[in-house]
Amino acid sequence: MKKKTTVLLLTALIAFFSCDSYIYEDEPEKETILAVTTRAADGNANVSYPVALFIFSGDKCSAIHKINSASDNVQISLQAGDYEVYAISDINNYELPEKESAIRMSPLRLKAEKISHGDLMTAHSTVKMEVGEERSLTLNMERKVLKLNEIKAQNIPAAAKSVNVSVSPFSSMICIEGSHTDDKTTFNVGLKKQVDGATWLVSPDAFLLPAINQAVEIAITIAYEDGTTKKYSYKSAEPFKENAHVNILAKYETLKTSLAINIKGKEWDEDQNIEYSFMEKESNPSQGNEHETSSEALAVGDFYKGCYVFAVDADKKKVTVLCSDEKANVMDYYKNESDNEQAAKTALQSFSVSGISKWRVMTEDEAKCINRNITKINEALQATGKTVISDEEYIIVNRSGYRRCKLTAKKFKQDAYPRLETILRPVADVYFN
View (cartoon, helix red, strand yellow):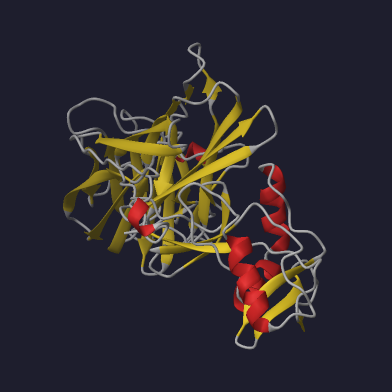
């Protein structure tokens, strides 16, 4: 439902009506009065009070007033001239700028004790004040926030110890003139286990500023009693909408160890349905792991079939994963390149991960990528109970042939010819249609 704020402009000389909602105003040079009343169009008090009025003449803020309720009558003394009026609702959540320093792009910062916005609405209009003329101005208040009503996760395994959800991106601040600042924030919340043992739920009832034209990103992290952690990420090209009720439903599919997410949004004045899902599907046996069908684009840091994703191409159709297993005694320093190549092929066939069959030796560039991110990778491997990358040397390949390097070294360096103790940690490419 649209909300309205009515502004009556009386340019005749009127005795000033005192009001407790007064904040700031300039001393007028001419006898012109701006009388302000706020109300909802249907007579219901659906605007969230208090409402702040910011009145600008040119680049100067001439007055700031606060309206505490729909029944408040506010009279503002102004000199004749052209003005822009900005209205912002539910302002008790924010730190307001001083009149002397306020500009149209001044951000309204949340107070320290506030973790989310209020039912934030804004309006803007222009008015010309002339002596002896009476005017009326109506401001239509438009809601700038969405309301995150509920996040529910279903079919969660009984061994789960905690379920946490992060939703992003959101804008952290709004400016007086209604635009968002570039500062982005993420909403994080923990879910509570329900009596059925498989459903986890939270009702945040949080008002959030959706980032303009930016994709929705949701990450669900499940921690288990045995200390392992699994993270499931979702990204959509469609952004959240202002003035919408949002519910997130995540279904954990135990047979495929994947996650299906459904988001339903309901605008407060008309219905809107936005649905997304993603799930991991079995690979086509005739193609090995060449192509997978999935509506989810995996991100660096995710795990796919238990293997760490350390590279994703630009169009997110190919990801490269690091095997969670490794072995030594593969190549011999004293053997020729051809013998070592055959040894590598034989060893790679011994690595078995369901749905991933085309393992290969990591390239030098891939080794450098792993080296740059070694701390983050090892933390993720350790958190999920996988074999971390050790300080030993690992087999890599470049245009000159097979080489060895320390993936944990502070400065990457490759040496010629692997030794018997050099470790093979294979990688594989997975393609998504």
